[in-house]
Image (cartoon, rainbow, N blue to C red; front, side, top):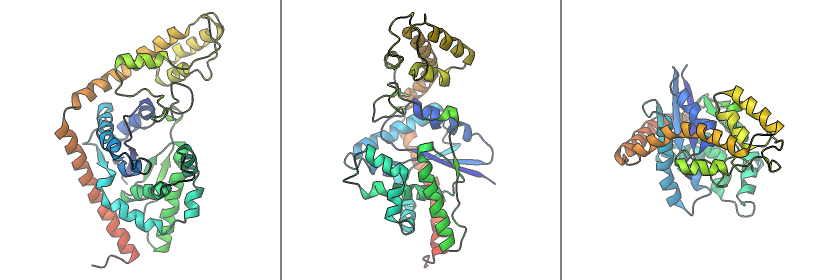
Length: 336
């Protein structure tokens, strides 16, 4: 049986190292597996649920996200990259699924509740934002995704998709919709903290290192990283836990024995922050240079980029249309 993966990103800006660790590297691996199809969605409609007053931001970010995809090695010949709003079947599926979900259930979704608070939507909530989990269910089921990689904070969203699948199949006595397997990240893929140590790396918090950052910007950001505020002098013993430089070294350094030695040295004193930051800078520069170089090569290839999105969206629409037809047939509303 062919495994079908669905992943994606909201186009609200360029992608950063957190995306690289959390999902992009994994997508490059998935696309090379036998008996596996991968759909990658640029979720512009979902991005508009909290950016409706700034559509230009979304429009510009679609290209930025695509460039980041291609630069890290996602191959449009192996993965179907498409734009959510170009697949009208997704909106129709969502309309049918909304009848299977109560408003109170949507309000109880922990992810929705958390993001409502984060975005100050508690007193003025856009309906599109509240129904985000139903939109996500439409995206997943339209392609009959068997596997959906998500972060742990998105687990309640996928559980709601599974509920919708079960309800639909039970009510309409069918097995048209596929219940997806939730693929949680490995320890290495867990959300990367921001350089300020104040939570996850995030575009909105401006605490990220972007895949498109130039050499000088990367170094400047690394030199500003949160370490141990009590490690004032080189000879002072330092704390490794909560020190962003060491957290990044744990993830990005190929030589783990070297990191163990550096941690021991730092704890005992005699190792300065500048030295470990320079060490991390060398590692990240090596990782990001080929990505940035490839990205710059593609930036002016407007017709090529547009063709990738057009062809991917056509492929995705064909698949979604087949599912929608089956759904309407199961519901008894495929009249002619």
